[in-house]
Length: 136
Image (tube, rainbow, N blue to C red; front, side, top):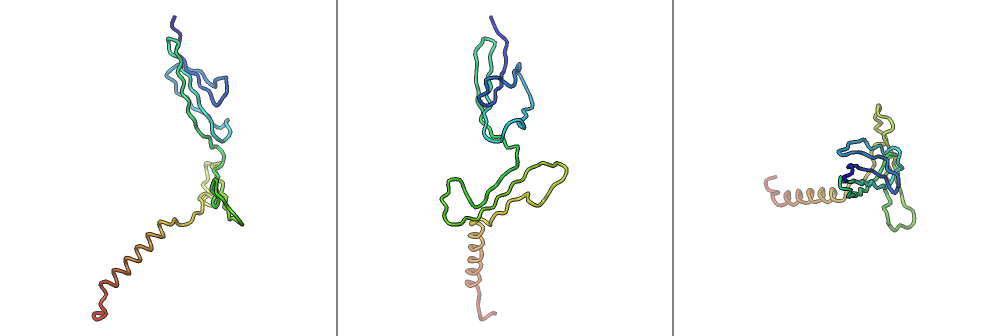
């Protein structure tokens, strides 16, 4: 006897599905009720012959403010005093854009400095190669 096709959707290890649907399904997944951090979405689908298929999708929720830390990397070995800059910003107000605090201060990357030094070195080389004091 054939059964009905259905899809059950679970979040993390909750034994009770937060939704049960008939395929095809399209819904809006509200993550504001989940705490920030890693989670798992588990979809269990049953065919008309009663065979179940399971798909697990790991995801991360970040509804709170975005936090960046400059000066300390995960697993880094440090000693003495370490200057640390912490910035946290979110999108609490949709009607006003606040410029201050919305970007992280970062130093100029080393590859940019290497490119500038190489350009200046080539310019000096080119200048000394073709410079003739008699025509100056």
